[in-house]
Amino acid sequence: MDPVLSSEVLAKLRQPRPYPAVSLVMPTHRREPDNTQDPVRLRNLLAEAEKTLTGDPDVPRERRLDILDQLSRAAAEVDLAHAEDGLVIFAAQGEHQVWSLPRTVPERVVLADTFLTRNLVAARAAEQPHWAVAVAADRVSLWSGNAERTVEAARDGFPLTRSLEDPDVERKERIGDVPSTFQDEATRQFLREAHEKLRVLLAAEPRPLYVLGSSEALGLVEELGPLGPDTVTVQKGGLADAPAAAVHAAVEPARTARAAAAVTALTADLDAARGRREFAGGIDEVWRAAKEGRARLVAVEDDYRTVVREEGDHLEPAEAGEAGARDDMVDEIVERALDTGAEVRFVPGGTLDGQGRIAAVLRY
Image 1 (cartoon, rainbow, N blue to C red):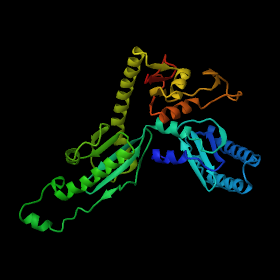
Image 2: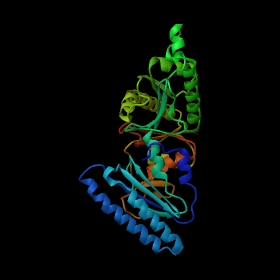
Image 3: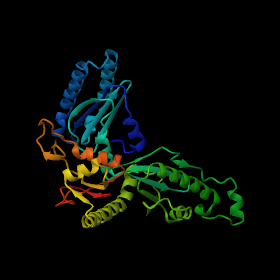
Image 4: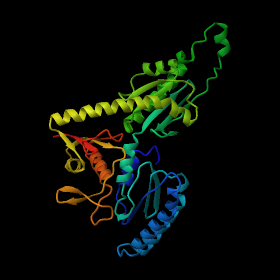
């Protein structure tokens, strides 16, 4: 999945389209021999979409041909050689999009007046993305990352660069006035500009932030003011123009430590909620709480998926393929919880033992 999938992009994807907006969702595989089945499954899914479109009397011929062309273009863009765990294709009149997800998804074709985004929403929440910014006196680069990878994000004015050449350096040397680069006013102004751009970015798209740089660079960034409560500094210079792998490696120890501390705090929060009787545990209780907007926080184990069916106001276990079976209920809960303002946290498998692998802290 695009690691800089933003709330703005998701909001645009969820806007109504002229019927039909076609969503193709398919599990994929990273390694042999399982990935040999992926091209066949994709062809079958595309054939199913074409058959469904052709047989739908509510789809005008011209629009059907356009959407079939969009599906063909999307299929040509799919890179199954570098597949992750899930594939989502969206196609509507005049547009198509392809998303590769680091999270498994159920296979389905859906025609509606909006794209089926719940799998993207859940994958983005599970991904737990962060920002990293690498600071040097002549370059400040922005990076988007998660537990698996880091990529440079050329956006919002980043990377910010300048020349370190001083036209009057000979005069300064003659009079002994050669200050540290990070004490130079031009450098301070340069980092002040970067600092302001970061504040704007974090206000628009909040994420944990890791600031990487030498001790002098970090000291100056701190002097310019706080960037937010989720900011961690990592004292390692030379990364402003480094490869993505080096930035990822520098961030990873701090990210791992933060994740472990967050799981400990979450477990304590769930225990306290149980004591206050503001707790829901298991797929059925959490589904009802999310649907009613009562969930303040939802915790889900990373690899939790289950097949259920609705029986009145409850969910009951079901078999895949059974009439009325819902095999993306976890993703639907995540999407519903986020829509109602709840925080969603994904945790390692086994964290919610005894709590049904999914739990919630309730507002009331």
